[in-house]
Structures are given as structure tokens and as C-alpha cells.
Image (cartoon, rainbow, N blue to C red; front, side):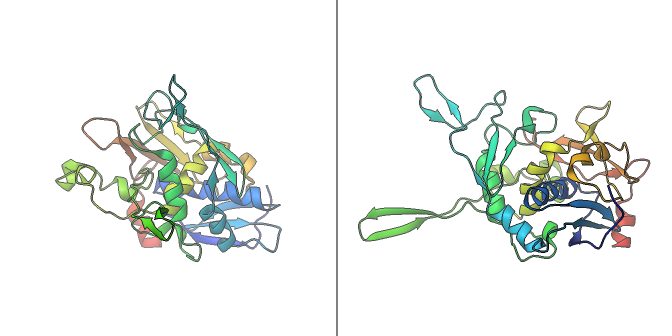
Length: 288
């Protein structure tokens, strides 16, 4: 912990959006693995990162996220040795980032925080979100777009090469802008059932998956309801987890729900958070 220094990286964040908060934690995780002397804090609707290395920049950080590659071989295996996709709610397999940094992701063993069902391919969703990141965007948490899988080259002959049509990928629903509009009872129909093409926020969805590995919200007495806290003093990633729990950091606390968004009660989404003791969303929007 140190006195505030001139930030190397600075971008807007809505602390009442759980996805944006945990994406900040994910970006801090990447920054710490890329550069030395990395610290970060929240201040006046912005997330600030400082690093000792002069090459540090938001562009390089987003490029690292964009270029993420996963190790192969972590999938379910049937008795005959055939590899199959993990479609089981009881077997939440990990993902291992092997490039440009190394990081094992397996926090979703805690089903209370997990938003996706076994029918959703977490590996493909994560890679699609990373691939969709605009590395030049100076407002990364607000980059919205329709997300597709990377184009897959195919060959139908020695001189006939084409690209298979990429598949649209729906997000994890960490972003509360998405979750707040996801319930069929509110929308009037199910976007999942109709397979509609809709906007996602790839930096929020992809980097939340990373951030939640180290920075978990605090459970409450209510089922699937959690709290997290910002921090206003520069902190290295090693001591951020207790700050997220509100043990120190002089920040503000927020409460959100990992709410069911379908009648089957399999798919969930993070709701917009409220300031503990009141709802500060309107005030936040006025301040920004």
C-alpha cells in the first residue's frame, strides 16, 4: 500500500454494476502479471491503475486480454476415452489460461456465484468475449457489440478454402445491464429461446471471469445475495481480496443478487447493485 501516484491507466467504471467491478479486478490481475509495482484504486467513478514500468498502458492491457489462449485437454472424458463437452452442473471443470499469462480459473465450483448452466460452453464464451475486445477503446467497460466465435477456416478441397459462419455467443450475464433486461416476464419473451442477436459487453464478461478467481464477494444471509466493496487507496492485488470484503480500503459497499433469469432456474444473472444502506445508482449517474 502506498500514497496515491499519478495513474498509468484510468477508465470509467459504474461501481453499481457487479460485472464492471469484477472486470476491474480481472484487469488488475492481468496488469500485476505483466508489470511490476502495480497498484489500483477506485475514485470518482473511475478505476485507476499505476505501474512502475513505462511500457504499461491500457492498450497493452486490453491486448493481453484479447490475446488470451486456453490450454487444451480440460474436458470431460467418457468411459471409452472419448472427449466430450462438459454439460454437467455437478462437474464444473476449470479453465487454464496458458498465454499471454498463466492463470487457472475454477472459482465456479461455488455454484452460488456461477451464472451459466451446463448447456452453455464456458470455454467458448470466454474465448469469444476476449476475441471481441477492442484494444483501442479508452472506455473499455462500455464497449458493447454482438459477439461471435472466431471465424473457423475450413477446406473442401485443395483449392477451395472458405470460412465457416461464426456462431453468435451469448455472455455469462455478469454485466447487470444485461441481467436487468434478461427476464422473460419483463421482456415479454425469451431471447434465449428465440436465439436473438443481442449486445454484450466483452471486456466486462471476459474479465469478470478472471477477476472472480481471486476477488470473491461476501455472502449474506440471503440465498445468492452478495456484497462487495470498492477501495479508495492504492492497493496491490495481493491485498485486494480483503478490501473487496470491506475489511479496509475506505470504500463503499454494494449488494447484488445472482438471480434466476429463466423458469427452469438454471441460468442466472447478476442484478444491478444497491449501495448498502440505500440505492445510489441515480446519484452515481448524475455525478458521472
